[in-house]
Length: 524
Ligand SMILES: CC(=O)N[C@H]1[C@@H](OP(=O)(O)O)O[C@H](CO)[C@@H](O)[C@@H]1O
Ligand SMILES: [Mg+2]
Image (tube, rainbow, N blue to C red; front, side, top):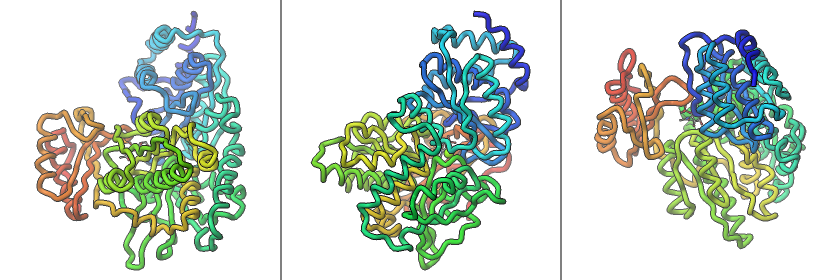
């Protein structure tokens, strides 16, 4: 078919020559100034995906936890899932086509996938609060309309809200109604129903300090609060009135720094949580009377939720298989607790929720969380009515900070647990995450759910001999899929040893994987 008009449309969104980007852990991500052509092309690709699947496809403009200056885009498949690996490949292929070969690459996808171009197409679009989002989402709209697709622009929404809309639309309302209000109604009704099973909560127990990362999560929590009928009293900070997105705040900052965000007025022992920039991650924390900071990360969340679900299944006499899916970043103590004490199956996948999501679907009930607080529960379809409210409260399409927060709040209330009781379930092994800049992070190739480096030669041996020096130690490295860095993770018996091991492994990465600039400095 004749698609030559695409050439003139695409000239309005030119690709800077030589720029090459990969569809990474969660789509394309880089400085916003490099993304206009990518957005246009993802508009084209989403339209093809919609024609192919005869369903609505989502396009979310966000760079999640990255700095405010960055932006990004990811595609959402019909059931609210991440787009499949083959189409990630097409995305990279289109993104990197030079201006005059874009049409050829587009036709190549149409041919390979045998797409009937006369099919209609429908695309849902959303964006986070980044200043660059407005013009970049217009570029997506241009891409869709240049192939004759229809769009519904939801404007400012959290990433999980857009996943939810796409799923609602393609299941014709079975999952809920595809509006932001429908989302609030579904979650709040389930929360209120579940909360009826909790004994009367005091005002203190209802109080939750929420760090909105100066992003979309803060905005959406304000919209949702009236739906919660005062059953939860949220005190919002970093609500974007003046602060910069993700700067010294948000879930990623709290998890990696193992410290409280700026701008939050935390009383001793108070329950606090942080969202990330697009509100698909959440972590909890508190400080004790000695001023010591306690983090309750994705591993602790997975433990709380899976323990609760397991108890419900036992009460209902149901023999359903429940499993927790983790990544290499899961704290060793959490894995041991789940396997040895809770007798729950645990499996480990590569980083990125798309990998965890698929693994979780292999079980009747799959609870999946990355250590950073990105996750949800999936595959609840066979569970029974007793679980209904819990199920309704969960956004099964993707990790969702708002829905996760409500599930946690309900479970804590039902079980009469304080954040300290929850924290005491197991004790984390001290750990440290560091970043190393190298000239080309692709030199590091990994295997075994990213826990071992296959290349460059000698790196894994170096890590192995460093790990041997410490007790209960573990360390691994992998190239980030969202930032131009190599990530180093280490855990050991003491914080000092975890820090030391992480630093020594960073030095090995710098030496063997083409480190840029001065070698990493020790942490102390
Ligand atoms: C160690 C870590 O937290 N990695 C994050 C981060 O991916 P990287 O590929 O590590 O940059 O961003 C992803 C998207 O939010 C998230 O899924 C993942 O867990
Ligand atoms: Mg995110």
